Image 1 (cartoon, rainbow, N blue to C red):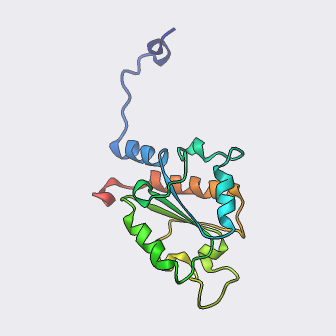
Image 2 (image 1 turned 120 degrees about the vertical axis):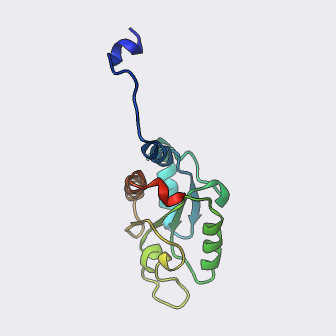
Length: 160
């Protein structure tokens, strides 16, 4: 029994170019590891065998910004680290996305002082916020799925 018999008289399947490109982008996101504090341990746990981010096409965390299109900022960002974060973000190729993981990255957390940036969105544009202190790996996976839904709805004209 071949594939032709299972398909019946469908002929050929068509899909819009925009849908195909967005499908490819969601299933082949390469995250850049940017773990700054305790949230990084939960990010590593999400990559490990128990939660397995590989099923989303994220085989490994990249250390190079030129090979990644997703930056996961996990932990508190200090004023001294903010220019480095921005430089790495600028070196990433378009299209690029950012997930802010944890309360410290999203709002500064309990560190309300002059040395900690009160939200990474002061430095780079954030697409998805993952709440928690530290957030569980399931929360990060939910944030990634939320980002996938956002990417699936993007228009190609934005990147032209």
